[in-house]
Amino acid sequence: MDKRGNILELKKNCAVIMTEDCEFQYIKKRPGMFVGQQINFDKKSINKFKNNIIRYAGLVACFLTIILVSIMSYSKFNTSKDIYAYVDIDINPSLEVAINKDNKVIFVKPINEDGKMLLKSLKLKGETLETAISEILNQSRHNGYIKSQTDNYVLIAMSLNPETIEYKKKLNYLLDALNGIAEENGKERIITRVIDTSWETRNLANQNNISTGKYTMYTKAKDLGLNLSIDEVRNNNLSDILKKLDIDSKINGYPGNSHNTDKPKDIKTTTPTQEKEVNKAPVISEAPTWTVGINYTIGTVISYNQNKYKCITTHISQSDWQPSNVPALWQKQVVTDSKNTWQTGVSYTVATIVTYKGVKYKCLQAHDSLEGWEPPNVPALWQKP
Image 1 (cartoon, one colour):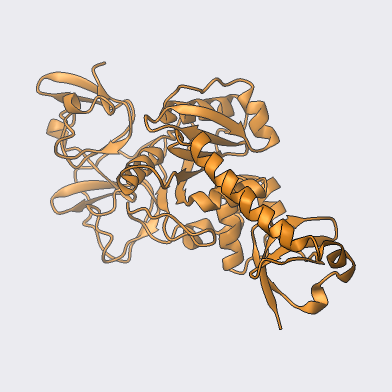
Image 2: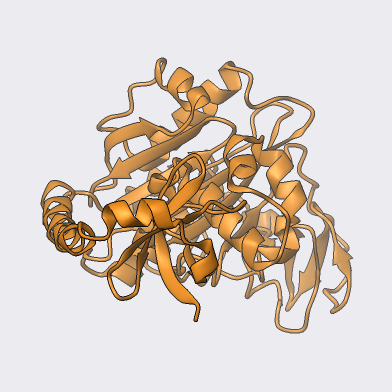
């Protein structure tokens, strides 16, 4: 009869498994195994010699494991009680940023060698998350990881502490904020992918020495039956991995602004790509009416409900993807005679200047304006230039 267990450790030729009935078994190592993976195995797979060594130690080890996990859990929530979220950034350098409830950086950890090189030129502790990511992008540009005349992919994976008060509300706010951080500079185009992942997924990623974002891509690839090993995902260029996964259709399942945490092997939802080109198309006076079933490309301007919208993500329109409902796909265009006046329902980008009650304000963070978010009321979004 098959047994079921989780991989605790991978050795050269075997894997250490803890079964559901708290037994430890050595089995023959198979391709594609990774720490934390749940597998089924039969008696033929068990290494009898090694298991004789651990037979009498198994029960003791099991109790020690339980005690150790309890101690680690207690320690984790005491040493990380100030950590509001972990944010992993993958460009080709991979970094993990820990932030507190005030959105300030507590520490930054490199995940790969390129990340170590990048951190040598950065001092991010105490900075806001938005500032930290902007500096990471700028330094990546300086070090040649972000290039001109090409698409540059940035994957941002956020794991929010489940003990955080107002968990869901803050999750949505932070994801929306993250999605607007990466901006174009010069002739470069930066394509950001923002996903929210669970605390457990982040821990499994750490055990496998890989970023949370890349680990999520790996588990999704396995679910889809794609031939992609964890070593390939860990070591390959981010752009190559995204192309191989065809992430637009397989991971970014649908557009929208709802965000849910995932299970370790299931991305239930992701924040859609925010693709914005440097040479933005001007708003034209005559714009075609939005229609279902059309392949809209970036920069296309359409008319919907007497408003004009500009496409910011290439897509084929569907019946429930009206421009007013999916700001991840469409950006509302300010009418010409009041383009400098602050309005609700407009997607403002960083550095945009608006006028409100005769006073000018500069946008600090990309966002969709809402009633109650007037510039003088939200200094986190607007400041007087």
